Image (tube, rainbow over all chains, first blue to last red; front, side, top):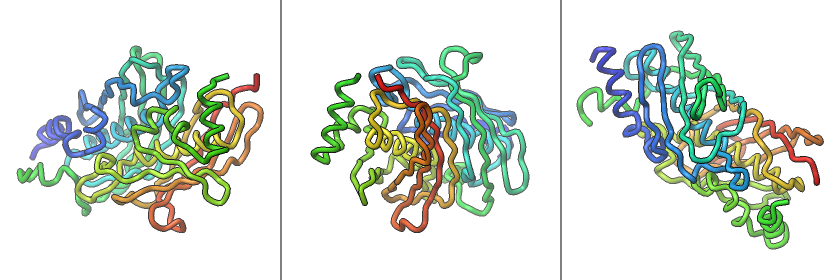
Amino acid sequence: MTETDFHKLLMQRFAEFTPHVAECGMRIVALDRDGADAELPYRDDWLGDIERGVIHTGIVTTLVDSACGAAVLAAIGHIEAIATIDLRMDYLRASRRGLSLQCRAECHRLTDQVAFARAQVWQDDPAVPVATAVGAFMRSPAKRSQFKSAAEGKA
Amino acid sequence: MSNSLLDARRAAREQQDYEPLVRLVPYARFLGVQVSMADGQPRSRLPYKPSLIGNRALPALHGGVTAAFMENAALLHLLLQLDQDRIPKSIDFSIDYLLSGRAEDCHAACEVSRAGSRIANVMIRCWQSDPARPIALARAHFLLSAPE
């Protein structure tokens, strides 16, 4: 499969092959070699502080980990298993009730074994980020990827 | 002061009923977090369910779930151990993944390295069947609320 086909598959079927992403209703809205844009529609389930009307930072981390994973796979350009080595989140401001979360993730360095990614999260204004993040990912070409059978046309 | 937080803490401390505390945090309830006491310290448990999986082929838990569970464990730990009036605000969070999370329950224990008047530094350890083999280690900073 070509790189473009792979990007299309990744974008369309990311949620389908990642049960927790599907559970949260997370979507990859754009994806290419340069990065991935992910969206998480608002749900009251995301609240961490009802009194203040603030979204739990844990779900922001889940969005970032997913989007970075998608960006790393997009940079690799073919099917491979990847695992998060570490992730660092900075919560710049509170995420407010009622608004979806948007994430832009980019893989800024890809080596044979390790990929480095960074991400930014915002709600209604990209210029007003609620979180920034950096992470490292391990590549495991030999391991099973959840996208493998789909790419081979078995799913 | 939030009465619901006060009531939840009282239920936890006096009746070892941690349900009201978890109910105060909708996202913790969404994940299915449970709290208990072990060796005099709060301990969080995340019962396994298929919707927590990130890689269906391995299978492995979603890394975001492990991170969110651990950060939430630190938050609940602070609510139980300190007399905070409000839910502490997260400043930052850093996680190191050591092993792939299997399709099993997770447990988390926390240690407050320092709680000053404004900032708390919390170390979090997460394991599955074997407490001696952590699947992830994390560190979180929280902004504390000043006493009224």
